[in-house]
Each structure stands twice: as C-alpha cells, then as structure tokens.
Image 1 (tube, rainbow, N blue to C red):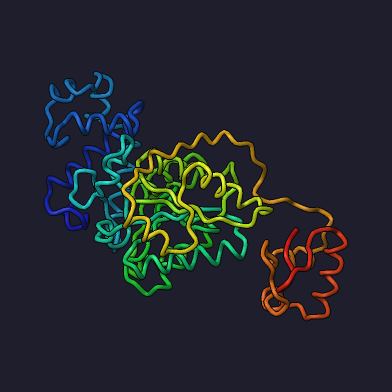
Image 2 (image 1 turned 60 degrees about the vertical axis):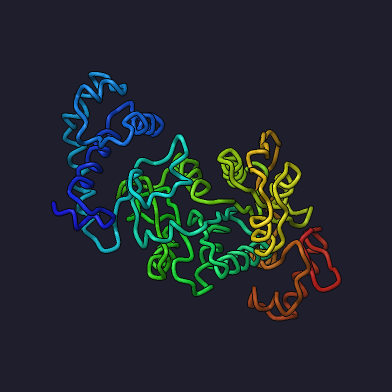
Amino acid sequence: MPHSHFKSYSSYDQYSEFHAWWRLASVKGIGVVTLNTIYEALEGTSLHTASNEELRRIGLSEAHLKSFLQPHSKTQKLWHQVVDWLKLPSNGILLKSDDLYPKSLKQLPDAPIYLFYRGDLSILSTPCIAMVGSRNTTHYGEQHAIQVAKELSLQGVTIVSGLAVGVDGHAHRGALSSGISGSTIAVLGSGLDRIYPKRHETLATQIVQQGGLLLSEHMPSTPPKAEHFPQRNRIVSGLSIGTVVIEAAVNSGSLITARLAAEQGREVFALPGVVNNSLSRGCHYLIKEGAALIENAEDIVRHLQETSLLADAIKFSLEVEGGDESVVRDDLTKDEKVLMEALDYVPVAMDMLIVRTGFDVAYISQLLLMLELKGAVQQSQGGYLKC
C-alpha cells in the first residue's frame, strides 16, 4: 500500500514501523506499559528493522516473538480494516516516534505507542488545557464551561476534552464558538468511526471541519467500553499543561482525571460553586487539597504565567465518601421535573424560566408554589433556586 494514505508519514519505512508496532501490540500479554518499555529499550532503533536477537535482548519471550513474527489470522484481518479506514480523508496514524507526537504525552510511562486521528495534527504543538466535569451539569456549570473554553481559545489555548455529554460537550462548543481554527481536541474511548455518545456525531464533525482534532488509541470499529474511559482520561490530562474541573461529585471520573493531571506534574484548576449543590463538592475538595481556584479564563492564564509550582505537589487521596451526582425525587410530576431542570442553585428569574421551559407565567407560578410546598425550591432575591 502506498504510504500516501498515511498522512503523517513521509516514507515507506514509517508505514512499516507502524505495522510492526501494530503487530506487537496485538500480541497477547503485551500491554501499553510493556510497549513503552520496549520502545525505550530500542533506543531509537526501528522496531521493524530490529533483528530477532535484538528483540530477545530487550525482553521478548520466544512465545511473544513467535506471535509477533507470525500474526494470527484475526490480527491480519483487523489490520486490513485499519488500512481501509486510513484511506478516508483526514484520517491518519500518529506514532510515538513521530516528530508531531506531543512531548508532554510522550513522557508518560503508559503513553499510547500510536494514536488514530482525524483532523489537523498541527494543533498538537499549541498549548493545551483540559476541561472536564459532570455529565449532568447545572445551567451555572454549562455557562461557565462554555465561557471559559471560549475565552481560553481566544488566548490561543487549545481545549482538550472527552466529547462526553455535559461539561465535555460544552467545553468543545465553547472553543468552537470562538471562531478560532483548531480550537479543540476530543479524545475518544472508542474507535473514531464509532462516535460516542451518538448525539455528538455532529459536534465531532464540526470539530474536524473547524481545524480541530479527534484522537483515539482504539482501532476503528471499537465500541465504547467502560474500561476505555479511565484510559482515555490519562491522554486528556497528558496532552495538557493543566486540567480545569467544572462541577463534579467527589466520587466522579473528573476527580480521577484531576489526580492523573497532578501525578503527571500538571496544574489543576477548579471552579467553585454553591455549597448545597452536590456537584460543587468535588471542586471544593480539589481546592482544599491545593488546586487553584478559578472564576474565569483570566485566572487560568494568569496562574500559568506567574506560577512555577509543580502540580505534583497536590496530593489527591480521593478517599472521600460521596453520594450520587444528583438526588432523584419520585414525588414530582412531569412538568415539575421540567421546571426543576430549568432552575439552578443560584437564583433564576421568571423570564428565564419561561424561556427554558416554554410554560407561561401563570403555570410556572402554580408549579413553583407546589415545589415550595414540597421543599424542592425557595424564593430569593432575583428569582427562584433549588433547595
């Protein structure tokens, strides 16, 4: 196959190198940490040109060597699927040995040996900030995720997130709304032809169309699996000089990403929230443990410009008991639940409730009275808010 189908490659040797790493990664019993150990042991030598003696010297057993040299028929079939996928526009492979592979990610002991991509690789050379948080954001969280991402993009910072619903999606959209080409990178926990969640297929397309980038360590046709998402999070934080957490429960995956960022020596930022909102507890916990409190994008930029502190000084034990991200009530009617979704933990004015629900003033007033009686909402200066 001509190497022109592999956009990041300039020679047939690079195509052969990827094929060699693909075969080795397919050997049973060889994981990503072992692959990195072998990569370091090669000391710049190409895997596809290494002799059998060299491969034994760096630690391959006879069984591993046999599987590497004589791939299973299933492995060969999967390889043809990869080749077919690479023929499509904007698709490509980035090897750890390639010049465009980010140095910040390369230094991790579990760095992906190769990444599938769709889009423009050049944005990997820009400063990146990860943004993560709850999938069930409040209006407060949504507003700040969009605004912070947009403002950072206008400052020349690329937003990295995981394309999930909630904060991830809001962060990607906020970056795109800046109008800056190549403003965001989405890291997936599935193959790039299996966009998850499905509702974000259009968003993924917009990211590529506006000069952004989709990344995954999983081959095409790989479905999303629960174990893929913690693995994805190390890439999200590893690509970035800092991670921003916007709304998160104390037992959430977002705090795991923050811990990974700290362990990787990156900065950690957290947006504070209302104390009676369970989604504020994770951010408040991070702030107590040493994360930088931020109110806007300016705080992040200023901190990165002024501080020389290492994020690994922040210790995250995550040994904090926490409940679910939200309390589910079964004593509300369908329309009461709609109104509760429109409310927030900060006062929301009546005109905004009309816009968010589509209900008229009289009906909203009736619903608010019932919700007050049930102890679900309270009136405050400036509007109504959740209890």
